[in-house]
Length: 621
Image (cartoon, rainbow, N blue to C red; front, side, top):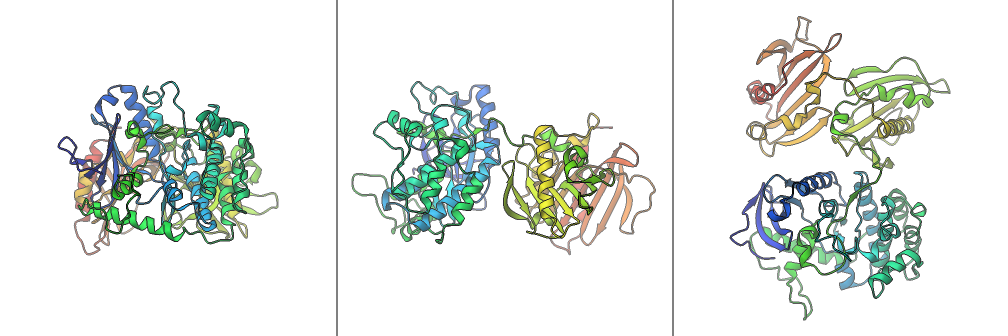
């Protein structure tokens, strides 16, 4: 870790640059700090590496893909700017040693540590695979250990650099031979099973101290991966059975991450790191606090490396923990085998919706007989509630009357949802209860607009299996040919509500941090210190005529658009008709401002300030 020099930026985006972690042929890596005090690793690419327009496009595509990966067992991108002369991205900073370091310093893990490692790897792979990515370089140095469990790093960025001559020179090895799968060694198409093989090799290394395929040369290591059955006799039971299953040469013979997770959870030990590992994690955390406070002196308790290694403990702590996908930028500094960042898109993504498809999904077509026909006979045609909500009644083969509702699932049910332990097309299934007469099941789409699809089922003593079965049928249809609603050119239903907002205006009215959440196909929710701003573009029953309204809703106009206004209990809502569509329906804009201070006044004034520039951008009917 070195201080910034005069050529280094003081700020990148919203991140204050504290120090330099490293530099190389592709750029520099900085230790940064967000406005709320959190530390991040900020990677900035050199301008000469991005002169090529195609490179910039690839870099942007991969940054956005990596941003889809979130979760407690991975480290994700938290900010980026790919439009500047020197593109940069900020990754979550993780104060913890790598698995490689821990095994080198302390020896193999205990059964308790192995259980925590196996659970964490399975959870991380579930998160990465549901985005349509394969990690490709799961190895001990890419697994960081924290008190909460392992964190898997270095995913999603490398594809932007795959065609760079510095990374694909003759003789370069794609991946880390001692931990790559046989299909990767033969340059075949990779699937999630490849990462499961690597996870088995990592578990074996953690249990024994060495990779089961390691040899004196790279060719011999690759030969072992392809043709030699590994000797896992030193791996303690029952973890040995898990490792052996993961290391099957045939991808079809390996467990899925779900199965790996289930097997790890059944190990009859407590999932916890050994004491020496927890102490090492604490040392990293102290070092992080020291850098954040402005001190460049490592904590006095932090141990030094044995003589012969002159790097300080503080440098090791921050450099190892902060390097989430960092190798793509400082690869020329490192000596070893492997590509700098290695995630690639699956050959056949499980659910690949474009943004337009996400916005225009025909929810009622997804409840049609061609999708759900084997669940029962239809009592009536699917009923449109709004563009993001449809319901249908069916009678199952046993004569029971069932109800199914498909929606973009934001709301109280989604807020209380938790993982159910199953997946549909690599997407983890969530729900608000394990069983019940009325039951919700969610999956959150990861490609296109990120949004939860919710299937609610009712009519049985336990409707949860029905909800999950119906949701699986919907996802299968979406993966093949998503049905879309037809809208006119210039429809506001094609607008991205989060993008059309003015961030500086949101920040001034709603308050810091004015964080945006997409809450539907064309909806956005902004939260800040002062309150919330909700914006929806939708098709709904028109309200620009003299139809009677409840006592708290009145006819009004705003910037020439007719609609209604509600002003009560400190919050304000405008619902404006933009253009009639069919029958009594119309395209509508709904804006809502909810102050956190219930005694505050002027909510409608604030809402008008927020809505006015948005209305000015709408296409004219």
